[in-house]
Length: 354
Image 1 (cartoon, rainbow, N blue to C red):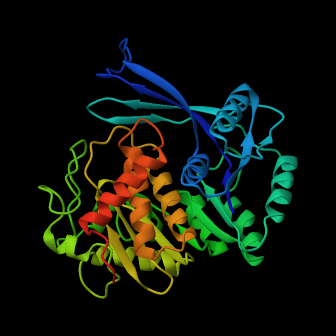
Image 2: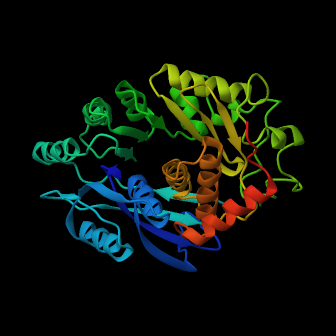
Image 3: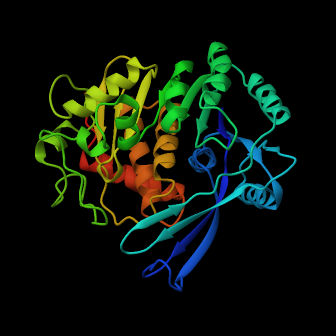
């Protein structure tokens, strides 16, 4: 059973426009409102992939009720705690041909009684289940909040996953989570090995495509990673390509993570296991529509693959398929879209056995 913890969920207002001019009247071409928050996204994608999942966290006000209704319409079980004041935040996601822009609100602050009630919920999660704490912290909570919530669960045999950023991620490693899922910039900041995530790609590593360009086929496609990277895809490897990335993943493990799943945007994802095996899976072809939720879908797909008793390389392939499918559509991808990309990756042979 999967349990997701979203301390600061949101309603995501996704707006598409041909252009955006600051200080001027702008008109949208279309707009939609979705349930949001990283943990919520993970729970929804796990649910769509046929895995039992339950969403936990805090909601408040009428926007919280609206989010609750959206999850009910999806058929996702939830046990959110309602705060006595405030309102669940609304985040703006603006998509134009030139750029993706996000404006995230702070969200309501949970009081001590709400935190105590949450701790009681987490204490009831049985050993062997998986708890995924994902997303930002609401106002008023210390950076070590995730560590304090996860550590007792991990001590009871709950498999704990952490997907956050900044000080919350650094402090959360004190709980020795079974898995973390940083993106390249978060990995660079966490380890201090680079100022920007792009620096973790060296001369022997595929170069990310320019922002906004269309990805080509993961195997044999024009403009995708060089042949050496394709040959390396999905393989547990010793010394070779991806040296800076591998060094950063190992550094994250020394800081407390047992396994590290790194989201590489349009280049796919990489995994370093607690046994030292390294896997890389490039992304499939497609034109990005909305990047929000892609990393959450990657994490959900990977966990779903492991729950199906898949080998790490195969679970990584499903994760990349889920993340890419979500990036190629306005919101979280449907299960059939994930399966289609997963089958295409398997057919292309981009995730070979070690």
